[in-house]
Length: 345
Image 1 (cartoon, rainbow, N blue to C red):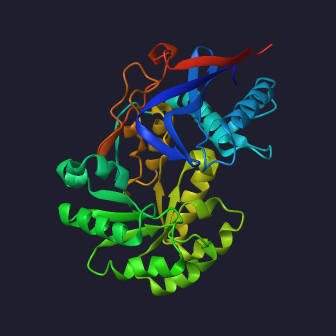
Image 2: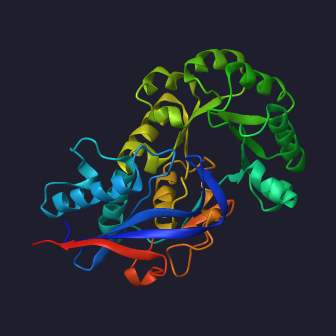
């Protein structure tokens, strides 16, 4: 049950510009939703990622207001969705808000540590070559290298450099669907001496994934393909699922994928999509279901500041999940503005 719902819009400055949807961005924009009942507040985050989410931020605002009205009229429950055409980011936000509002209030307050992989991109290394051995220097056990934006030989050289600078660290490759089948196999051929743990979304044309797995000794991980309408045709080729809950369909859908993955012997990794501290805590809760994995939660480091007055330490090889209730006075209202509110009649 909920007595009132408030929706806020945030805009956070980034440490450097980043390209989403072919546009250079210096800020991250999104929504926070607060569900309140008997002074217990449950905070969720609704943050479509430009170029990756199907919905825009304006789409999300419109649907969040519609569903807030349904919810206050007791026609909608985030943890028992029966409505169709729910945007993934909106589903994630409502489910996380109800989790914090209800379940978290009764959950144990002890801290939990989640293992995180470091994200490395060519752009960051070009700006600061001293970061090349940062993973091993800071105690990371795994590093994910973004490739595909440069020439193939440049990507190959980058991976070898990272490998040499970080011995005995698990290497993961994310090509973001950048290569043809022949280019991907050329890359794999140059990795014979490199211990690659998996390669994520190598192909522009996902219909070639079957041929790729037949010829590649490197395990395949799928991310975007999991969200395709034809996903069932291709998931058999993957040994690893990369789950982005705010892009995929919220907490409940992610838990179903996790259960299916574990049942079929697949690996499953929780991955962030540039969420704030509120969204990150939700991802950490999901990652608790996969305690043996090293998760992809390194996007938080791009924020100059968070929506919290005192940001949580959500960067590093071991991220601590604090199960504490969030209050309005914990938030930094210099970067947040209210866009909608309503109490139950």
